[in-house]
View (tube, rainbow, N blue to C red):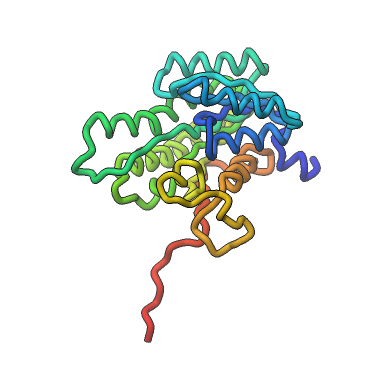
Amino acid sequence: MDPSERFGVGDQTALVTGASSGIGREIAEQFAAGGADVVVCSREQDNVDPVAEGITGSDRPGDALAIECDVTDPEAVAALVEATVETFGGLDTLVNNAGASFMASFDTISENGWKTIVDINLHGTYHCTQAAGDALADGGGAVVNLASVAGQQGAPYMSHYAAAKAGVINLTTTLAHEWAGNGVRVNCIAPGFVATPGVESQMGISADSVDRSEVERRMGLSEEIADVAQFLASPAASFVVGETVTAAGVPDIMESPEV
């Protein structure tokens, strides 16, 4: 297999959750540009239709299907996977990208608020992965989970989100062991700050202001996370199993005191 095929996803069908914008949309568009057929979903059909239309109306070789799906609804998730298999004949890669959060101190997070964030980020990953298990095993597929550095290090005022993402990271390791015998690789990406529309609205930093060639930075681009996702879904990552790849730029470390 030549390198272009080994690092490619051209013969795949990929299902990407939370694909209406940001990282999920970029992953879907990049996979389609590489020749993969992609199913894109979000909670609102109107939000995800433009993504599929943009792919099918472009010169990207991959096809696209948009489906409305709430990942916290097991019946909707089952229908999503069924539609994927019926439309494209199978499923090779599941990208669990759907997520949500809000900032609040731990003392002020209501039980409903806590459950909502955990339900979307962790329980949603459970629903989608379990529903897709048989289809992925049919062809020796891959699961790419999206966590966060918050799940590795913690994050002030985001305890619910950090706890849920820590669960996703541990689920990745555990499930990778369980499903290896089925020929399914399970891996995870833990992004740091990425210049998505959500981050721009909160921090005022747009993707246009981020220089991808600059190594010394702490802000990334959605394309850079999509690159990691494509690698993990490709044959080139055949010996990468149960790993969480941190994509967060220059690490924040303790500096030596001046003497």
